[in-house]
Image (tube, rainbow, N blue to C red):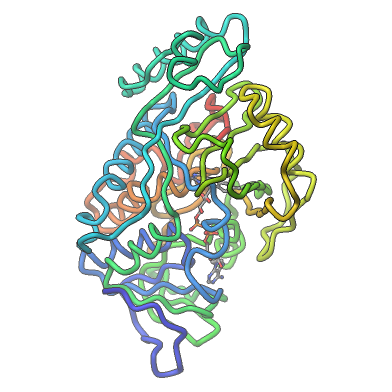
Amino acid sequence: MGRIIIPSEEDVPRTADVVIIGGGILGAATAFYASRAGLKTLVVEKRDGLATLTTTASEECFRAQFTEPENVAMMKASIEVFEHFAEHIGIPGYDISLHQQGYLFLTNRPDGLVTLRRLVERYRQAGLDDVELWDEREVRKHYPWVSEDVTAATYRARDGWLSAHELTYGFAKGSSAIFLLRTEATGFVMDGQGIKGVQTSRGLISTRNVVIAAGPFSGVVARMAGVELPLLIVRRQKAVIGHDDLIPQDAPMTIDINSGAYWRPEVGGAALGWAIDEDPTPPMDSVPVDWEFAAIVLNQVKQLAPFWEQVIARLTRDNVYISAGQYTITPDSKPILGPHPEIAGLHFNLGYSGHGVMGSPEGSRMVVDMMLGRMKVEECPFRYTRFAEGAGRPSAEKLVI
Ligand SMILES: Cc1cc2nc3c(=O)[nH]c(=O)nc-3n(C[C@H](O)[C@H](O)[C@H](O)COP(=O)(O)OP(=O)(O)OC[C@H]3O[C@@H](n4cnc5c(N)ncnc54)[C@H](O)[C@@H]3O)c2cc1C
């Protein structure tokens, strides 16, 4: 069982096989796979708890509907883990509040059916053959509340959402790692071999392996090792509406594929979001919110699901909650996983570009497998060197959710 502690002086181990910097979902998942592989694993987290920065701001959704094979493979493998999570971590009955109510991408374009048919074919070519293509009649048969304007949709039943908090703590509890809270990594010690230790606010920890999983702060941490990562940090907001009988609780994650606005049921109400273009900002420990965001996203989602008009009409301010976090975006919107090519012992698990909850099991497994030589770095499509090799160009994937 992993130990999650605010350490006193004597609690801080002075050596480890691997030190993971960051206690969000990616740090916890990395700790799980590393400690399961027999490595003495430490996680340092500067905040008071695990999963309290970006992970808690997430919409907590997962999907395999991607058009690039490496993304499809990563999400399919991760979804398998979600489906058998208690067994995977070895804690019988452990509940991550898994909701496989599907992902529904809607369009109201006149040529919607033709466009989505092409998209489904691309999913199939990328290795995903269980996406359904629905015409307007079929969409309304399943979900009578969609607008008459909707012309077509894609739907995949095994997509959905879960509790990112429980997922993080499940990985932590299922590990045998030690999680040191209120402990900040402040620098690296290196020698001719590469990484030799991590400087922290609680002193030096000697180790030959470090994994940077510091979310939006990953670039800041990498810079301490003299490495400049190609990351953009961009704010994203989430609106949560409390209970309202008009919000169908059996609805899937519902996305307007043209605007990118989305919503899904959440304990009697709904969680909504929209990746509105914003300028990059520095990483933040506390991300500000705009109250207008709720009105903006509600006005958008009502276009394809008119029942929202009535919800909006009777919505009171005390039934709306806004939160925000930051996406850590790479040039091709895919994570950076595995070792740095020149600094031995420096590994990355970061840059998921808005998909870090859904990709956490498989991405973290790959990071650990590369560290242990069980996976060849050149076979990992998410390796750091892809940018220097001329790959890693901007993705054709839409950065929705
Ligand atoms: C609004 C919004 C919606 C999203 N929706 C989804 C979604 O539906 N599905 C999905 O898969 N993803 C979603 N994401 C993205 C997802 O939340 C992230 O990809 C994921 O949480 C990243 O996890 P992480 O562990 O890297 O980062 P974090 O959760 O940010 O954890 C990083 C940790 O590192 C710590 N840290 C930083 N620097 C140091 C240091 N020097 N020393 C010690 N600790 C340090 C931080 O305190 C932090 O706790 C969403 C993001 C946002 C903002």
